[in-house]
Length: 608
Image (cartoon, rainbow, N blue to C red; front, side):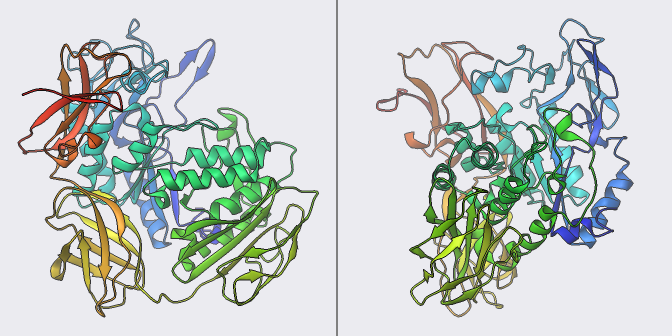
């Protein structure tokens, strides 16, 4: 209804991300005298049926059709980490974590003779291993390495994608075997459904995680950008950090994540307190939205933020919409900036350069090819700031604020060398100035998915490709003819050629022989992926050393210690000195492998 009446399209929304639509339990679960139900959709029982409270498959198909008719994509949430609350000692608790396959019971949490679940108790979140192989709270933790489970989820994903789903957000990726998730992504991309995928890996304020970065760079899935979200909340919501700190986070994440433009940015979600605090000024929310809509990444807006909804804790942060007012400043702000991400590629794919910063003011530039956007934000609502010696890449001329002064922004004048005439940025002011120009050379901005096997179709986004097909190169291997599925000036669809597995570059040569920049770190897989548990007994180590796996195929590091898989685990499923790890490897492929011990400085290879 809100698509048809123009509320979403009027705001410039191009995709909607809905709660997990699969069938959930209907039991009322009592915790310490408080009744709870799975209104949220995260207590699934059958991933091949719909949540009856949401509607039928016909209703879902109507949603897809309506969205697509209005140029809106549909992203579903999907939570294959667990089923529902269960108790090892009380089989009658709730639904005992029961899992069904299109109405047929696969098994329960107790008397789990098929090994569908992990039975190691609840996680204490102390280590990655503990979080993967123990229950998340009391939710029955699914054993994804079980062959029945693996087949079931790949079928379920294919079912939903077959209905026309455009993207999937995976819940709790931190709590599932990374090897299995890579094989799941490979399965999706190989089934003619190369959709955009992103996972939830929660990071608290000021927290970083090498495992988080490694997942984003190697799993074939993208991630929600919690580092960005937490920093924006500290800088604009809580004022506990400065604009200089924000710039540092943007620079460090751009350096850490290989596919920074695919990170999904946000300022609040269903697991956080609402960004807007009750009784507080709305300007921080508006500035956070402006920042998110002009920053690198894929911006996601939590429902109701545009209506300044408030709420602390679950379920208050998940309340019903308070209204659909199209005249709020936040709604108008989104309406002005969302379309700009389509018309100006600098906002979708550009580099980010800090141009002027102090504790309260952040001015940054986005640039891609000949397109530029310059953004200024003053978080101090009582103090205006004189801006001097500001340089930009904007061509000489006069520029009005894209927001039309909605957040007290001003116009600027730019000289021939990019020097901006001195001006005063108003208290609480935010302005966006921009310029677009045709591409003078071909430029590759993004390749998606970022992983695939030969024969899979990927999409190359950018500009200046021309209207006639040229050549795409994966490394030095040329792709022409029928392996180029489609060719437009800003988008090419191409099949991955038979090229050596591993990370490679992708570049474009136009029909007029102009060559683009190279997109780095595209991950070519050897073949379809399956998950295998590697285990080694009696591998004793000294303090500080860990055991890793390395082998002959790219998925095992191609005999390079720097690409080795691990560190392997030795606490939950197996205990020291036995080590184990679940690894995504190419199916039907002879594997050679060795174990190595490493403490970072010294590597000891297994003999023989």
